Amino acid sequence: MASKQKSDVKVLKGQEAENKVLEYVRRMNRPYGAVDVAANLKGAVPKAATQKILVALAEKGELVQKNYGKTTFFVANQAKIDTLSPEKISALEEECKRLDEENKAIALQIKAATTELTKIKNLPSDSELDEQLASLKDAVSVDSQIAKRTVLLQPLRSGAPPISAEEIAQIDADWLKWREEWIRRKKTFNSLWQLATDSLPPQDATILSEDLGIEYDTPEHAALEKSHLCADTKKNILKRKR
Figure 1: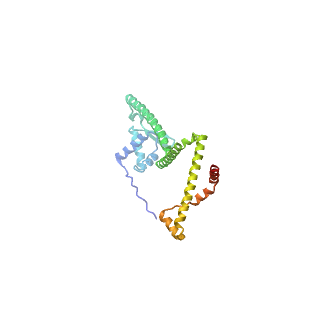
Figure 2: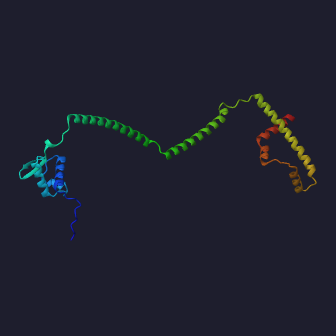
Figure 3: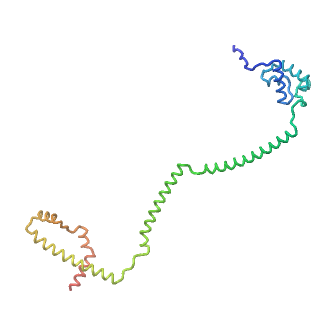
């Protein structure tokens, strides 16, 4: 069987109990029965003692006792409750107005701060700013490269200056001149090289050409010799000889 838990509430007696009951009824300033007062004091004053104290306070004029049927109610005597003077009331009203104005000003500040906070929350975070800066740097780098290439291409936009008929004729004449000279020198080299290496084995002739740093025509040169460019040149050379 569970034992009863002992209450930690101190039970008041005598004048201390009377002061507690009177203070409570005045503070609440509404009708109460003895049972309600004892319950609201949470056992600090027993119910039987509370009833006697309430009756005694009513006899002293501290409380007003009223009967409603079989129930007796007690309420603080309003004539003995301290009231504020008109001057004090006026001062409190002014204080209330001042505090009300301060509250309104604070409310406006809170509204402005909330708006600013919303703006700040909508701003990009540090990591987002880093990403945007990196993208911007890449964009600037691309723009710089485009600008450099635009400068290089600018002369081509205006088109190459046209070549006159005289210049074309001079280019053809120079081409025929140096082409004919190259053919002559190649024949001279081949004749001299044939005489110099005629008595040498092919392997020794190859070693000698490497030692002398002789460079023969590459496959690209051979292809150029067979192209229409050199073929047309040969025809022009033959025409000139006739």
